[in-house]
Amino acid sequence: MSEPTVADTRRLNSKPQDLTDAYGPPSNFLEIDVYDPQTVGVGRNRFTTYDVRMRTNLPIFKLKESCVRRRYSDFEWLKNELERDSKIVVPPLPGKALKRQLPFRGDEGIFEESFIEERRVGLEQFINRIAGHPLAQNERCLHMFLQDESIDRNYIPGKPQ
Image 1: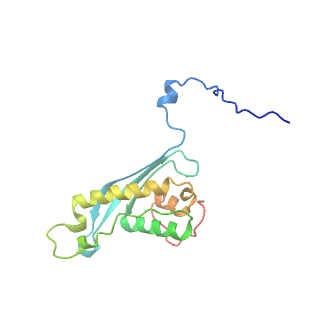
Image 2: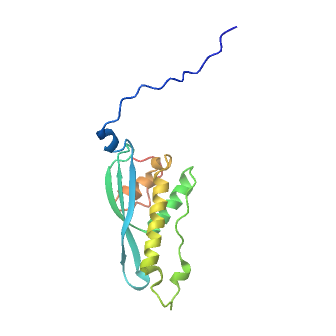
Image 3: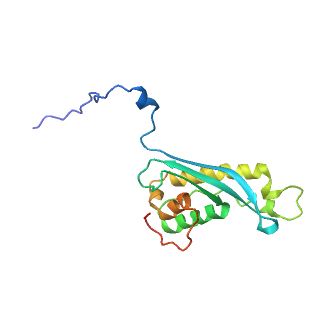
């Protein structure tokens, strides 16, 4: 009979951490901020856009820093593309706020500062949850959304080029 194997429980030899290790840049990071909402246009052609800034050191992204301007419909486009072409469960977007779009309201509706801020926070949470998913990071639509000035809605889905 053979002897039972015993798991080796000794500690791994690790070097002591110095200040550069402790306070240096993390080994892998992906930071996305949605900020600076700006409302443009008049009447029925009025909408709000947001700056979407990305910083990363992940090798899958061609740019390590980018900043693009996006509107709510661009976030909807990304969500629809991911639901159609990827194998990930896509989180919900903040709501459309249809009641806020009704005419003859006593306030600014969807252009009220508090609503815009609430939506900005929701969009930031949405894009960070999506971009943090390893499978979504392989989707070309996410790369276009985060790094290209304009979105090519006729693109061919697949891996980033």
